[in-house]
Length: 392
Image (cartoon, helix red, strand yellow):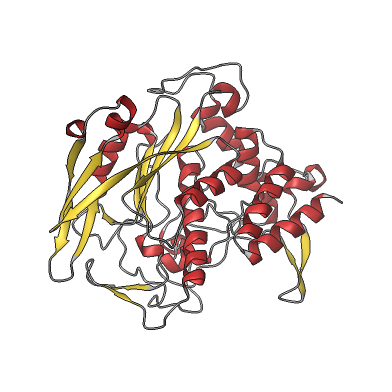
């Protein structure tokens, strides 16, 4: 597992607004990168002959009512249309299903280093090898009324088909650019008095004129390494505060420490009502066009759901996808991130099925229920059509 898992976005953002991103009609792939053809994509999913591909991993077609046309469920990875698109910048090798089986430490007969829970070397899935294992999600600081933290936990559970649990939220006190993490979990668990609350100052930068503060990711990761529960497969923290890594960054979406199985990500720049400067990290404004609260909440939830499962899958050993349009595609800027789908392609679905051992149809049914509940109409239609296709 890499020491630093790749984040969904490039860490040196210089064009971070979906409104201001300049797009052109055609931009070459990064030097050395070649898009895979149909046969290569099939082999990446683990099959050499088309007749051997199970229905669950076949591309297939469906009638798209909104477009009034038949289209494939899974499209090849798109050609870059912006110089900041991920594959216009990076020549990624990709990770085939076979490579995933060979490289993934969660499927190894040896217990992962630093993990403190029961281990069954004879198990064939992560759930069998680590029967106590859970994915933990931590709320870091306050969330506004536009997004319910519990919805993110529910989606991760449906998508990953693993036990997903929230940790007690930690408060962040922000005063004149100073950010203090307040951890009273020890007090709550042991019924201690308030004077046993742990208070830790986090590294941050602050612009007094704009009143904007950014947390430095490495200081948060150090705290998370101390908080990760004994039965955790991994721990991901979510915050609405802005993040940065180095002084030259406008921002970072987040960062993961793969060996320690922890990650932190910010949802601030997923807010569709905010516009961010391409020059100054502290410059953000409210969009001139107002947005209804319900529409804002729905879009913010959709974007945040994609982020959470993408990053957890990195911690579980799944690399960026270069074969199809997929939830695991890399993104070089927010507009590219927002454009990517919520579903997994055949390659990454096969990886997760092997890792977890879920029933693919049951997983789609759980996702359909979530999408209908939250009025994700396009996603619900796609899953419904996929279920109909699989029932043939």
